[in-house]
Length: 252
Ligand SMILES: [Fe+2]
Image (cartoon, rainbow, N blue to C red; front, side, top):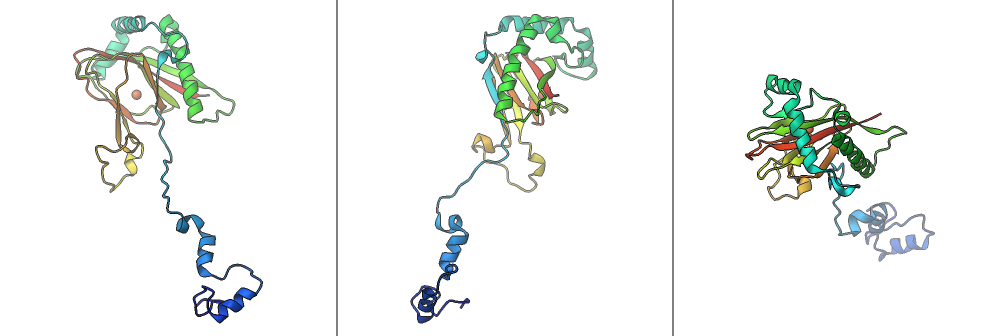
């Protein structure tokens, strides 16, 4: 029997408890009441609550959502012309066994060379600003600014293996040509390295619970994510070339 509780166990039926009840209460002597007072939600509320913490945000929108739509055909033909003319880029792809073409290692001034890329960056800036707002970054007086923008052309059988974008804050891609059967982009749960002995997720698990998420954007769409999010482009099974423009934004 606890201190100050009679034979009835604190229910107030025995003489000891009735005597206690006549004393001015310092706090309730009924153990059941004390439990409720200490932990009201845990014991008297039968509504369970499950929330999502540390979420990974993925932004998807039509480029045209902000202002005048870009000329998609001009953007596509510009990508193909640049790929054809960029010998340094072609050499880099050959030296690095990159099936297809990327301007990543050879051209750092697309917006200055081609007006369509200048227009594209203006639109991307607006999408990135919207995403920055969504993820609630406190920029502390600095700005999120474009650092790199480059073209990717993946022919049939081309892949872009799993990677992150170090030294950047926000990365993304806009889709220029996605022929039927072109690869989706595959995102990986950033906690994979910590899963240890956890079972795999069910194949029909909700998207937010899956370890890998495939997103198949349409031409004219833009995807944005935080640059630490690991992603890859699985093998392009389409006979046509998959053309996209990727970019990095930094904070300075
Ligand atoms: Fe990437």
